[in-house]
Image (cartoon, rainbow, N blue to C red; front, side, top):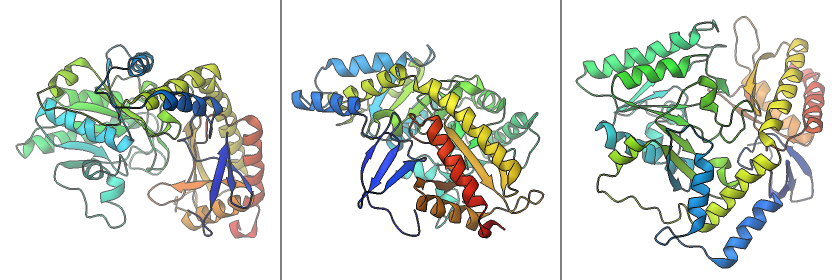
Amino acid sequence: SYHEPLHIVRAQGQYLYGVTGEKFLDTVNNVAHVGHQHPDVVRAGQKQMELLNTNTRYLHENINRYAKKLLATFPDELSVVYFLNSGSEANELAYRMVEAYTGSKNMIVVESGYHGNTNACRAMSSYKFDGKGGRGAPEGSWVVPMPDVYRGLHRNKQGAGKQYAQYIDRTIREIQGSKKEIGGFLCESILSCGGQILLPDGYLKEAYSYIRNAGGLCIADEVQVGFGRVGEKFWAFELQDVVPDIVTLGKPMGNGHPLAAVVTNKKVAEAFDNGMEYFNTFGGNPVSCAIGLEVLDIIQREKLQENALIIGNYLMDGLRKLQGKYEIIGDVRGKGLFIGFELVRNKDKLEPAKEEASYLTNRMKARGILMSTDGPDENVLKIKPPMCFNKANADFLLENLDYVFKEDFFG
């Protein structure tokens, strides 16, 4: 991740500590959603570990309590939950549900999307099969352009959602023209590996309409952006005023403990319940559910969704002020504490500044701040810290960015 690798040995809140005691502000590890090693999460896990941990072959109140509390955060239609261990497993299961419901394996996916490391997930991840070492889209995966209004095909923010969604309509007709049926559409509610890309207004509403009219299912990948991170809403798909057929969850769900879920409606669940047993040894175990419950409680108790909104807006305001000072900052975008800023060498040609982005991450590390790059050209700095990230942290980040951007390397 850096020119000189880091050896991290402990963490607390929004900080990581190296083997020699150095302290780093963490702006990138969204897995530690409520803060690294949150003492209440640790205690919840310890308490349940002392009593019992087994699989769902036996009854236990934790899985029911957690299912009820988790589902209460979703629209009423999404009323069935399956527990797993990772976002990859969640997207793999969602893929199986699509096949069970539609009889088709044809998936429409978004350029530069990433959905996991299993075979099926890799086959649906343009970030992998179109990236380094990739061999192009495998059979059954149909890629549509990334709905990027900064450097993409359509840059007019008004109407771009409909324009980008039309590629989905064209792809459906292409699938049907080859005597095949559509299975589903898989899309992150905000694109992560694509470069922290906010979906243009109306994109998912149009896309979902095309997919459903063709008999397919709509999957929202919330593995990175869910659980209040976007501030305005608890789930990022709500920003688009849609209700997916399937939602996949992972990463922050257990604050670092392996925990994930698939949430769906009854019609999809009934189609999936076709006689072929689905069993997950560790999914929904008492310890995982105890930890998941505590994470939800902490989000509410510590008002972390509200914090994401307030601090996220404050941080983006600060980044836009830096954008006004430094030509290299081409775009600032995001919602809540899921933010990206894109470096370009020329604001007219939008040439990606990959080397400059790499230099910035390494210089910031030297100044005690951990950052990371993303996007197809690795020129987007992603900011998705633990949700306890505060105003003082934002000020420290902004001050150090201002300092480094003054260096001779940036001209």
